[in-house]
Length: 414
Image (cartoon, rainbow, N blue to C red; front, top):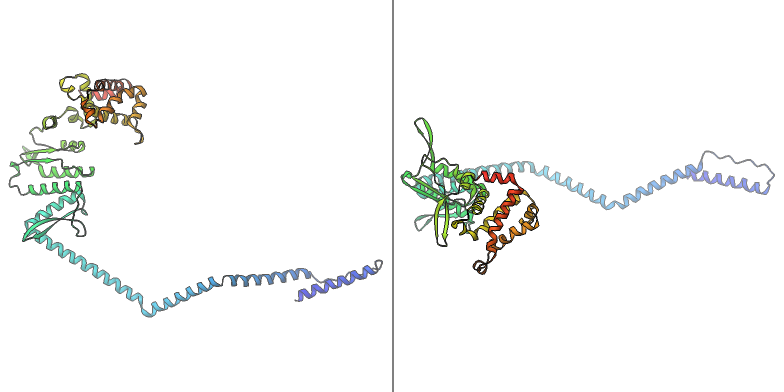
């Protein structure tokens, strides 16, 4: 208020001097003296008042938030006071001790149950078989897969397939069926008194199993049927059984079987050849498969032999050649142009040989490799003659356009 009063007094003095000057313009009138800068003091006072007002407004606007924060702090205070008074830290420590004891008792109980199961396994033949089969199954499918339990049915011990958690294994995948059958077969062999007098046949033990299990199955077969003996100071591989047959459709598994060490008796590799819809015979394995264990080499050998010989035996396979040639073309074109999976074999062949040659090669291929109706198989179509021409042209193009690849294929089939 002092700043405003001083400011108003100075304004009135100036006004009075100005009015006298207006009345007597020729009279010298002295300028009233002004002490300091009263207007600056007024501005400063106004600023201070505005600051107080702004702070008041801020407190008023944030009242609800400040109230909520105060309530939160008050609750935290009461909660901390409750923890201290009720000694919750001590109770929590005691709870943790009790939980540790409970976990220890559970482990002890499980150990006792496992020991009891092991003792039962010593006594019961069925339990011994269960352990053997479960170990085989778990080696193939993992420890969290199917388990075999022994249950009492009308006074007799029977096997029951169970899932983790004690649920019966009602539905089995094809891979699980294969693994269980193989495990059971291997366990039953333990009952044989003299394995050296037994002829063993294993039919495709990896059917429906993942490729990761191929090596495990090979390991089981090698451990069960092959061993090393010392002969004249040298270690030699011998078969434990009298004779072993292994059947498979899988090229990778076939390659691993060939790596097993047989005894001095010559191992035979055969192929099942269907001569009629109801009759099949065993023939010697083609050299391409024996030498390289490759489907690609085998297909090339079939096509190139047909191209060179075209004897009565090869002509009988005329209608089966499109599928073989289509597979060969797929492997060759993808090896040369490893494009995205959505790019068709037709596109890759066109990129390699051109549009017109590709059309001539693939025309008969597509027609006869997709013979999905009886009319197409039965009718004497002119395209049958195109199969020979398509094979000739395709192999000739590879020989001309890709001579290094062609030479490698020829050297692989002496």
